[in-house]
Image (cartoon, rainbow, N blue to C red):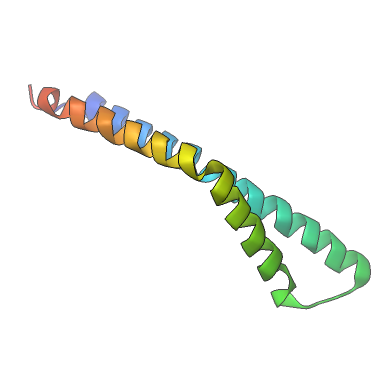
Length: 89
């Protein structure tokens, strides 16, 4: 296995990680930003106020994107397993 193959596999794994986690991270970022703006506008300094809305939003995001995330991860695993016989040639 040469260096180019290792770099290619690493890049592909990092891309899949970013792709799969993006919907959940984006949802958490958006909800946190909205709650932060509301807290700043109302001068409420309660740190735990954003926990429940984020939890609900992430649950909804998992319901919406969970199937796609699993299918993407299964396809990534299938591609990696298909490449195993050619790695050490």
